[in-house]
Length: 195
Image (cartoon, rainbow, N blue to C red; front, side, top):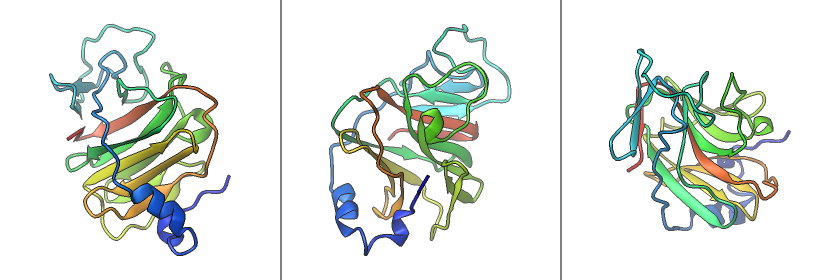
């Protein structure tokens, strides 16, 4: 599988970068409590999530993640161009992106496109794209806010530093096959929010 950090391709794919840096309306993403792993606590307005060591007494339903501390956004996409911003200021160990709605919720899942996840991860002060194997991202700084950009029809998922619009990473173009895609979040320690 070919993956490419956009930072290395700005001159050779200027059109791609220009296309993704266009200002688009930001989707008002909210977190789906029915999918939240029992270690994750959602705010009352469903706009932030934090990891807790203690398991919450959450009813186990078919939508809930039971092994990995993940939660999905309520919104689902089957066409069009969409973007949203995630604040990672308090999320030292977290990942953000999109997933297929059919992503397994029970048992451990590999975080990569083969399993239906397109995401980037912050691991302490290191960043990587969740490809197979993961792709290290040598960024000039650790982003505090990341903009996720989804062009469903074109088959693209790309990530940008939301504060300075610098490209972080783009997955190779793919076909989503008409399946619903949802915002996807993984929080191991700390918290993240949707401004």
